[in-house]
Image (cartoon, rainbow, N blue to C red):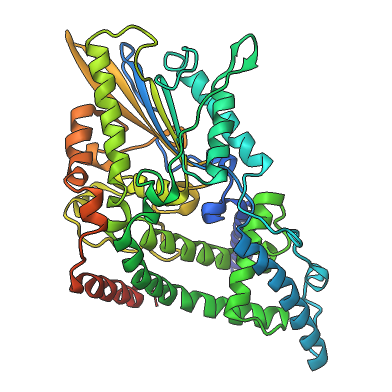
Length: 480
């Protein structure tokens, strides 16, 4: 009996380790790169989205609003300098370890000879060829998916294309347009216009640059984010220092995590900087990125997203104009069919919050009441908010307006597509296909009571920032 029990225990133990090994083998760091995640990776994993959407056969799309982030890009100029500094720092750490007589047998060989792949570059943050392909193919897919909307020759009054006045955003708009409007005239690409506004005045696509109150409150928010992140980085710093016998600092770990994300995203390299971290450490580092975005750009504060009200107003206005054109039977080619916008994570994230994505109905009610939202839970707990899903490179929200002649009555519905997949809306009973009036009254109207001036320029009450900061600091005890 003892032998049989021991045999059974051994089999169970072997089975457990097999499962654990398989789980570790299937872990792919490229799915955990926060806002540096590539778009094709997101399209491979759709578990958080609805698989299908049931739209009545008699319904037809009449207008589309797109809010898209730029495609994959190089690091910023600041981080290019940071990577050169990291190269110098790694050499110094290795030298010091050798002088101390530390054993470096566990140290990956690449560290001792690594130099920044961006060494010598003076400019950064521009769209890379892979990013161009992402937007070009996105344009092709939208054209194929909605032939009724994109069957007219290009005209700026039919297809309005906007981008922020940042090269990677306008280049993304051009790449998308080349896919969308290719082959319209004898197999050639059709010329099209991209409208931009000055950064200082672009309250629609770069509202975070034009909002004084946001800049003020962000100072408090950033200090809270650092306090939330610090225990994680302290823990991982100690862990890596012990593992590789180098005197890593908090700043070194931050730079190595950044390098991991860039190598995996841009070069498909996952066994260098990313290989320094365990699966659990990657999950924790990803979480620190997620909570930073949540607090500084997302549901952490209603100001983060309500400063995007001009964008939401523009979306609603375009739908209302499309409904009028449809009711009055305007001839094809005489009315707008799509508004296509290309900007940044700082645009896409707040807009996703404005329309109530990645939260449940009870949380949506909190948003309506402007109550504080809890920070996404720390791993291994599950969370809905993941930067890699919310705002990857080329991430996008499309609001498609449908005309539906149902029961001898004309009705209009809005379908929400997030990264091209039907997405449930908390403000519409978890449906991705929402009556326009419900979308307008339930989801949009609470925000439309505000305007850019009173949100961004009216003086903040002195207690607002203090109270908000206190609440966020209290969250520290929930995690640590």
